[in-house]
Length: 618
Ligand code: ASP
View 1 (tube, protein in one colour):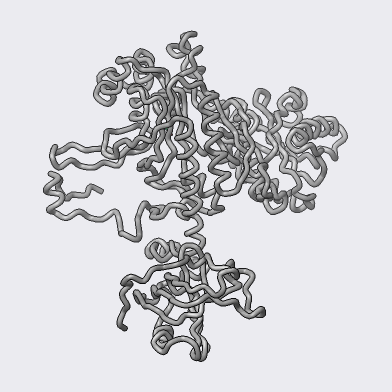
View 2 (cartoon, protein in one colour):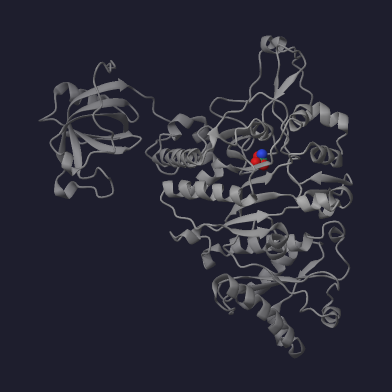
């Protein structure tokens, strides 16, 4: 087929724009053929671009011969220009589901600007099952309305963030991709240097050190929509490169950082029509663990209840419950009354999931059948009831699922080195059961109110985590996080590591960590002590971070900041199921880009230039 040239033909409208009021207008539309229907006398071409679809019609009695022949020859995904006039559709043919459904364009002339092979799947289809196919032919996949919408959301979120931060005096500054290792707890991606044989640049795991140096340089407030590279074992919701909104401020209080984040999140959500409540709730890490068993509580569910006191030493002896360990319970509301069989099978399912961890369940229903235990069952119900009331004002009924977890006699070994273990395990069970009964309680469903978004600040994380295998203290965050000032003053930093709190905070939404940050160390002596306490010799610290330790000596102001994952925020706002739906060119769970086929082998020549030998050690 001969293709037409665009020449000076100019598009007058987008495919989603025309309405009844435009009837009679001469127009030129350009786009892809979404679907084509040939009815003999009439040929319909649904013309698609980013903004929507318009029905173009060719009529044997009204359109030119040339235009008709082209319409006959055209196929889905051909790129065409339709030149003609807008006309109202007959009343009976109006399509209320399409924004342009009241009109159609009667084409007098068509330009076929490009043809197209039959695509492996049609962008006109909603659900395409084969994700590998979608990723391989990403350019076709991205044509789908759903994907175009996701990237519109992403664009709006980015713009809202930029606007808000710029209005608040933040400067957008770019930091390098080719740099030194920036520790965030993952492996580095390395780039070999051709000019300096045997040396490597590292891709940044985050702009952390650079943004701190920008504060030392007096920029006062910095932000960047920054790409970060982390070579981690991939999980479903991770990507080897991802985007953060990264910011840093000079002389900040924690409250100021929180306020800035709340403002740009309010603006980003508003940009896509969602309202959120501010200020966000705040909770210390200790409280989060005690009440939710996790450092990112999902506040759409009631908290756990501590039943430790209720289980007196005598009752524990009778019920074979370990004396010194906590007993915890929780409620999953509105699950509906379980039949005896359903209850028993749930109990055995959960018991099986506990394995030999030393945990067991107390069957409240059975407990009530023995007179001697009725007061205990009542006391437990009262505690659970209090948590439910605090959550949504309701009181416990047989429709609510009450779960009580007890430690068996003989302390579980885990307990010896992770004192939070029972809380965490019960917290995990709380989430598992909430998921299992999600259809019943409906608490994860969006209702179109600000209550859909339960934001939370988690503060006062521990500074160190004990590494039982290596018998060392590991940094719980990157090593530039400041300990609480009081814990430096009290000497705990030097002699009671487990008690040191970090000035670190996370922002959490509906049980997902959206971002984390901290007030930083701005004193060289404290920074040196942190490196030392992490088992880094002064020489090693100098070799890895000498430039930064030097910079700290030239007048470093107190500073702090945060970074939030943009991919995840957009995913939530777009209602997408995976990060891959909101990243234009994502990698698979095995870190492969199926479209460009990366990673790939380098040629011998390239390797030679890089002074590398093509040997793969396995
Ligand atoms: N660099 C940190 C991160 O990527 C965020 C921060 O501390 O600002 O998690």
